Length: 514
Image 1 (tube, rainbow, N blue to C red):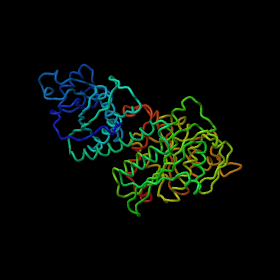
Image 2: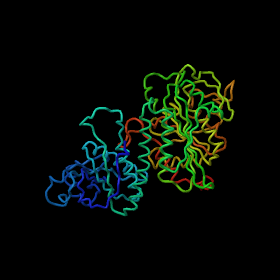
Image 3: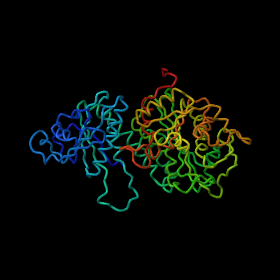
Image 4: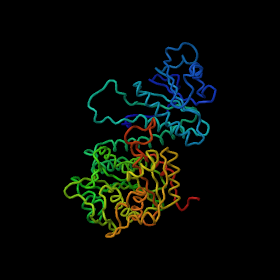
């Protein structure tokens, strides 16, 4: 994947760039020539007059400088020049950010198709968005759009597009501010690509052991502390939910814990990600069609570990972060959990298991209850591919958000919009919890078809107490997310960039102004 790709800010004059592709951006203007860099106006003008290039979104103009005689264009020494249309300027800073990410994705795709190994991109001027923000967004689009997963392809296809090896960024303004923006964009994009890699791995490779190994790797690279709870530990402390889901598996479960600590007086944020490495549904078996996608049921855990990679790189000084990934698969082996079984979660709450395919909430409940009791966080956010119902309600365009704290929910909504990973908040209340009432235990693990996403969150709410908490149901966005130039088919790496934004701007909840 993209860790093989390098991204740098360069102070070299673009006229002296001798690489494979030099890229400019242009903004569409009604009945006028697109707004663009002065150095390429003569290149664009004939194409605009012919209506071949107007600067609209995804417009693309391509020339070979060596074939153009005279004028300013002849001074360029690169092999190719491309101009990418941005469309008409967005009305908000978030819309402008997304225009640049989309342009970055287009640039990466075109560069791949031309087998360009070295690409220089000129960061465009854009009113309403500062240079660091422009550079950050463009960097994200370039690296996310350059992603591919070909680890298991054995044949070398000469016609196959190869990822770009080097992106260079140039622009009008301070190199230091550009480098700052580039670093932020690079950190979050590469971490999202790492989360995509985890999800793309098949279930026979990405097991709970791999989650543990990756966490240990991060702890070796960055100032993070890793702890792994094994099956024997779970039995000792009473994590009946994780143990129950794991009963039919040949592979033992893990509870992966990563800690980033600063000062004790700093607020502590706890992140929990569902690490279900393959979900057959257990005894309540899923239909065969599409079951291969259930290797993606660990995307919540991948998002949390991806976010911890950003934390490790940037080392924010004023926050403590705890990351937990309960990891297992859900199989229908001889000892598997059965419909009608009753389990006891950490803390003593009992559940009648009505459907073994509603397993994610069982492993998350233990992680939430134990993590809150052990680390006493100021706030908790969990991420899980939890319900098919969220796809029915929101499609593949927004992540479902449910929370017991308005201030926390508002923060997530804001950073999600900025990252173009939008959320939609759904309600919670005692009327939904009533659907989980059991005649023989404290709870049932499903509340019927009505409001399936909400009742799943209501189940988790039973294990968080009064701690400010938000639940993010990514079942519709972790894969098959809204098609974009920088979002591939398959896993999207959703919520890594949202989490990065949340951590970067974190402040104690009680100090937030309403």
